Length: 81
Figure: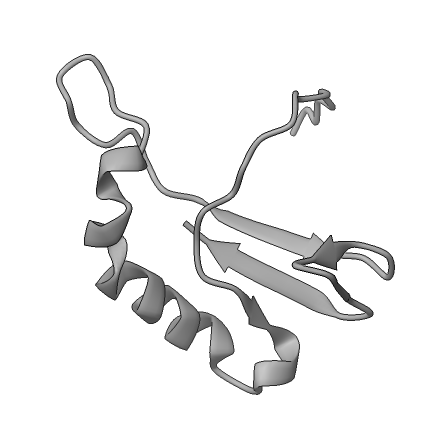
């Protein structure tokens, strides 16, 4: 597999926040929560030329210095959206 690195301009992430500190099965619960509220942000989703949603993604942050809403994390965060 070829891995490429790129630099993106700043962007905003809209989704649900979860942490490994939420215990076993937290990823499944988090995706369930995000999917059940998708209608609230569906109008913001990227769409193709036919108006169909282009896809969904999960953002994983694992950093000792990354800040989410002012919280410094020593553990991983998952943001499905």
